Length: 190
Image 1 (spheres, rainbow, N blue to C red):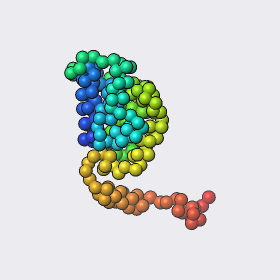
Image 2 (tube, rainbow, N blue to C red):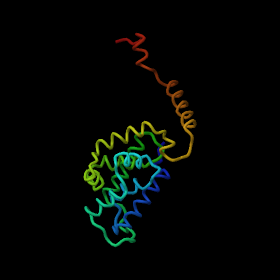
Image 3 (cartoon, rainbow, N blue to C red):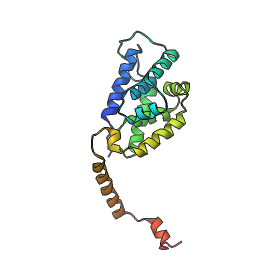
Image 4 (cartoon, rainbow, N blue to C red):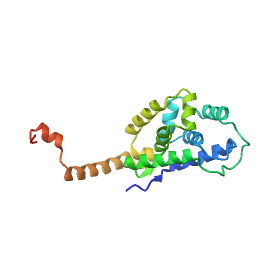
């Protein structure tokens, strides 16, 4: 069952997004602010992927200021999430559920930005010379390397995750049949 709870790192990235919008004097939280929140949350998978692509906090802020402009700093983004930013969060929740995760992490938020595609954050990436498709590929590779407990920031050991996976595989083996193995052994009737 997926309850789509945000991981502590994703919650912090969302908080940092709102803070960034206020710093820039914007009355809304857009995908550009989500991108900034993801790079500022330094423990998340999204931060690692973004920095490995050569992005920095200062670079993103500078591109936002040139593209969108800046208002008077210190305001509270009273309008909340823009429709595109809401869509990004919805896509993140869908990705989390589809992947069988019990949380929405920074990696899902970044994937949501990249999947939505037609947003300010992707334009910022393009301006910075980062290809969104390549970044998505790098994100997927990073997810395959990173244990879920580490990505979520749950503090659980890899051994605990491995025990859970072994339990799942045992159940899977108990209730399914490996057709590939049967085919190799010549046990299937064409």
